[in-house]
Image (tube, rainbow, N blue to C red; front, side, top):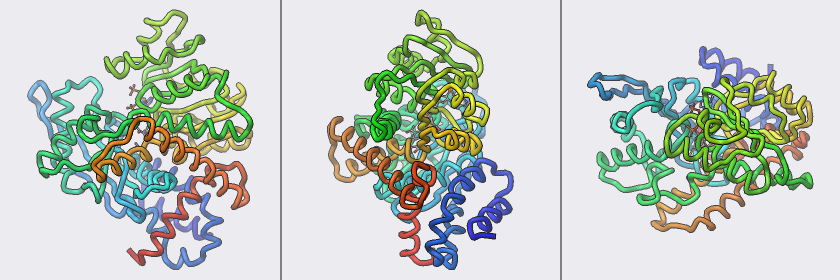
Length: 444
Ligand code: NDP
Ligand code: 2IT
């Protein structure tokens, strides 16, 4: 049995009932075989065993009082996965589906994503099974204050810097930051995605969606093509989806469909993103309302149907495993040419295989959605320098980072003999930097 196979088998034995963690680890480790073959010293140093084991995983109780006066209890998590190349960095997810397996898969992905940005950030992730949907602002504040009352002791501007993810946006970051500052009496860059009046960076709100479109644009350009005139499907209608839609349309694409967890809207005339922003950002409403407001648009219950709409480019921007093997086959049958992942692990392993075997250009999440965390690192840099850069400056840095990531993963795929396989390219390019740092640090 090879080194990679041994590590994977042991991981599954040591961490039973963590299917999402197994899935992410399988995707990553199986592509690293050519690297560990080149570096037999990694096995002696137990490098892969250490790489897949979080440095620390914190689980805690989050009690809070709801509007009826009843005490509610949620689970809180922070997995500090790897600090070889910088302080732990990664988002917080508030969603009822959150459990240790989900946080560990996200944390493991984050290590390599953060490495690919070229910036000094390690990997971490956290969150809670708390559902902000349908809660009052006061309930969300009470939850966030309780969550931070435990989390504050584990994080710090040079230790671990959380940010947003599903269910954690500007409102939640504000409440979390307020409580951290109150307990620690420190106004520092301990969270990113902060508001612009208290240390946030321009472009952070737009960064993940914009970055996704920038890297896809570079992949198109490398093939003599562009977004102009392309039909695009975007799943989700949250932070990543909205700004991916806006940027893709500004480059001449027509985005015809989006969804939330209840169903999808189809607008053959092209999604009017200002309407989506009003429904989702301003009113915290449901995407269904889009079809009530825009003539010619239709709404269908259920998410999966979105993948049966013919498109040139698919940008999954909602959640893990939203594209299964069947949906992948439908997309290919209908002529999809590019799939770039805005969400984390939105394609199942079998779906990825379908895309790759069909010659679809597939840009995996850890490369394609790295613009969010990259801009978070730019926010950290501005915080420690006590200064701010203009929108244009940050946007330019973001674009340069995404273009670099594209060429790094493309070059790595060629160097290792798997040209165009960007799953291999991204995992290998991300891993080599982390592995080199870990080897330099000795057995820690
Ligand atoms: P938001 O909470 O802003 O939006 C999430 C969107 O996805 C909503 O439309 C939501 O619908 C939908 N969604 C969530 N869960 C499900 C589900 N189980 N089934 C169907 N739809 C679902 O989150 P973000 O836009 O920030 O995050 C989206 C994805 O992008 C996640 O995978 C996240 O990890 C990833 N990501 C985010 C980054 C960021 O900077 N924010 C950076 C890199 C990656 P509903 O409103 O009905 O719940
Ligand atoms: O998955 C991700 O990269 C994020 N949710 C953003 C993390 C960050 O620290 O900005």
